[in-house]
Length: 145
Length: 418
Image 1: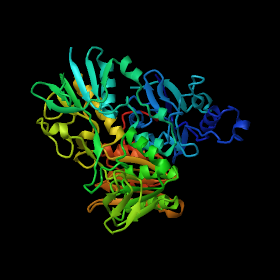
Image 2: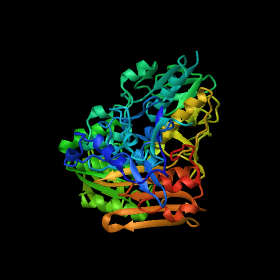
Image 3: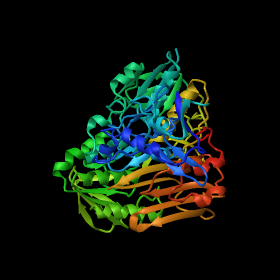
Image 4: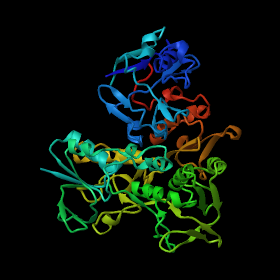
């Protein structure tokens, strides 16, 4: 399956990825409406600013997936073609996934007790972060293993 | 045709059965359960008790799962003993079930203190749907509930009952709650949050007797104090259900001893989940780490062993994530700094933020994060792999600590940054 990789040298930490991610996962999918929505959508990708390079991070859709094993609510499944599938309805906000994610790529959203994680923009089958990255620092390519 | 018999229908048993079926379409799989439900999310019963979720959300694997995967599920069947010479499980009704491979995934049971009246109606362990339902039935006639012990399970029950508007008193012998999983500082923070939300913590005493005619009416403490309560929850930890191992030549200490492939000392008998005592890479000895994620992983390892893949188990770690009234806490490994260990900590009591990491020889041995819980999983991985973190020790507590800080340590197979 295809996965997201990041070129930390090209990333300028402009955070376009965070913005398009949040908008894309908001009910309206429109910037000007999304910022006024009750629970403003959170991005599932975060950019960490380093000394010389910058580091975006989102769910790795790992082949070994400790979060799936740790989920006490059966909200997570792994599909070899589609990656991690998250059933938000089932999530109870126990944060076991946060506890075991070796990348710190899953974050808690305390407002509604649901975890925030990358779904590879399953609705348009083309991750918005990679599509919109102005420096092409985010690549969506076949998994290297 | 080979037959696998799995005793226990929860995390370990089910994950083992599911993985086995994926690897082998032929093998016959039988799961025995002494309960009356198909697989359910055991850890969610506190959410169910609290009214946060409905009963349907407890379903982990519906009936359909067993039929689709051709798994025979025998409910309300208690295994009485194992006849390992004949490769048979003997049920309590004397029925014998043959096996080629046997998986002990029979879990653990609440430790009940030996005090007068402990078996009265209204006294619960907190482990099964039946426990939660039993408490819910008593809610209309209950004003006060007593929780015996300040462990995680007891406090989760306390939280659930409090959300149901029941007055809750937690009786703790020691001065610290959650002493198995937290250090003093973080336990104090949790305690404060519980007390602020109306849960009373009675420290320094323990229950001496449960009073009542058949039904529980009150708890008498060793201080002489009597607390009226029609629900009593025993939260004094769990003990592995090793009874089956005891007379069958299977080696056990606290739990059933297993090797790195989850094999017991008897070649075709395996153990997984809360019953198993497996290697703990943080403690560097075997331990019973009775937790859902460990149980799932161990079930997968058993399936790999039975099918001949022989995947080595990296070991179980004590780890917990809990949230009381909006205060999330995650901890793993050793949280109280022993002699000869090093600790680094960051504390902002006003904001309820606390982060502490325990190290030995520059290897992470444990951590507690309160409120700001993000990225703790990175530390867990470093601890499990015993990575030397001397190069980044000064950065571990930084609020912006993230995976990129660890990339030069090169412990991770997966390429993230190119």
